[in-house]
Amino acid sequence: VMWKIIHLDEVNSTNDYAKSIAEESPEGTVVIAKRQTAGKGRKGRSWASPQGGLWMSVILKPERTDPRLVFVGALAVVDTLADFGIRGWIKWPNDVWVEGKKIAGVLTEGKAEKFVVMGIGLNVNNEIPADLRETATSMRAILGKRLEFNEVTNRVLAHLGRWYKLFQEEPLNVIEAVKERTLLINREVTVIHSDGEISGTAVDILEDGSLLIDTGEVRVRVVYGDVSVRPG
Ligand code: BTN
Image 1: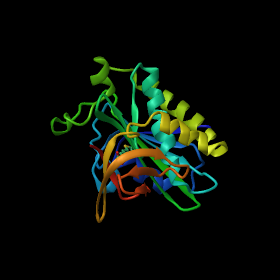
Image 2 (image 1 turned 90 degrees about the vertical axis):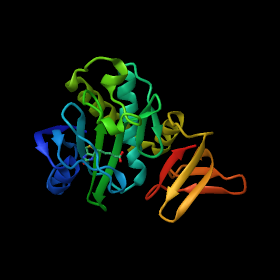
Image 3 (image 1 turned 45 degrees about the vertical axis):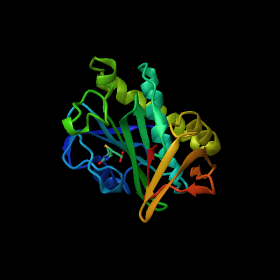
């Protein structure tokens, strides 16, 4: 993909902005904002987006809508962290964690058969709000120094382009890569969904991207959607 970047100082949400221009924009259009005033996470949560973090949304036009596409964003973040000497893990399906704390999240939205907007939020140099410091971290906090912001951005886009291409050619190789970098396999987890909880051992990520959980009695296939997973 050829990336074409639109830089904004401030916007409510780069995902919303990208969605509003997606139909008439070519694949590879990227919206990056210095600050978001209403950054969004999954499940209607808000996403703190002060200056210094990477708040970015990428317009993609894949042939088919595929929920596994979210992994492409998480893999690009993990590889970017590795470029800076940070070991990151994918917390299925769409978070990246470092040293037991969340450092990035991916939020894909779209219009079936028209476009996908992949939003990536990565804590780079930004402050982590006090109430999130137990559970969230940044590249600056991990490395103890500020990073070259443009370098981080370029790395994410380079890795994203590579994983996206692989995803279109060999999606199962992408699933394999997720499995190698995932935090949950062989861990005790609790899956929280709209009408209850399931606890068990996460045993596998299947070809369709779902998480397989062994409760001791049955094996349950968890399709992402309205779920969150808590390592137990
Ligand atoms: C999550 O972990 O729940 C997903 C967080 C996604 C945040 C990014 S920041 C850029 C883009 N714009 C948004 O409003 N959200 C995504």
